[in-house]
Image (cartoon, rainbow, N blue to C red; front, side, top):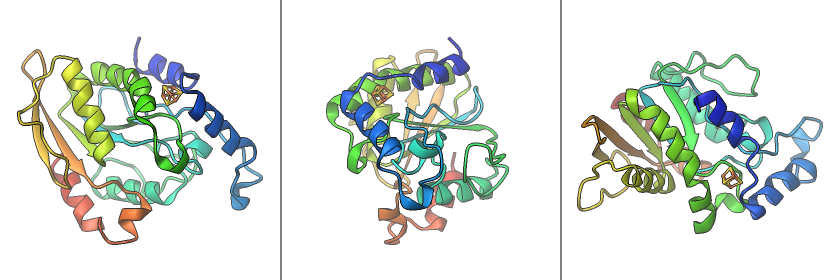
Length: 226
Ligand code: SF4
């Protein structure tokens, strides 16, 4: 299967009962008043960005009123505003804003996926949900591997999911196991001896951007290393 087929298969996944329930209940009755007249996606979010891109971003999960509403990764919420503005500054996006799925945004040389593809309550997937969704990331990485240069993990969950998945795929991971941190880096080696760099960044969630834990300059710095 290619990336387009993978995307199509992900959007109809119903493997996690709690998340299916949550994503659909937000779409039906949990709409924020300002979006009440808009259609809600209410399904898993597939990857966004071109197949074969040398850079892959691995986020946490769609936000209930963000990608779960618009159907596109990091689209329609403050986290996305932050991320796409930075990707535009870094030359990976054709525009700095990401409002809805038909807004003309295009990525170049970069694709965005997440460790969990459905919005979880309180942005907290369970361990079992993370494990259930892992095969989708596995497939993404298999398809991306031949042209992959670096992976940017946004937050600890993206970092852990990436390391776990590439280990299963037989990639070499440094020992001791690389620890997550903002600006942390690790060299991963594919079975055909290609080096792929894993880079960590604090997540672009409002919890980090509002408090100044993650600044624009900090995000630009890690994006410049990809
Ligand atoms: Fe499927 Fe992943 Fe959504 Fe679970 S979180 S229902 S595995 S797409």
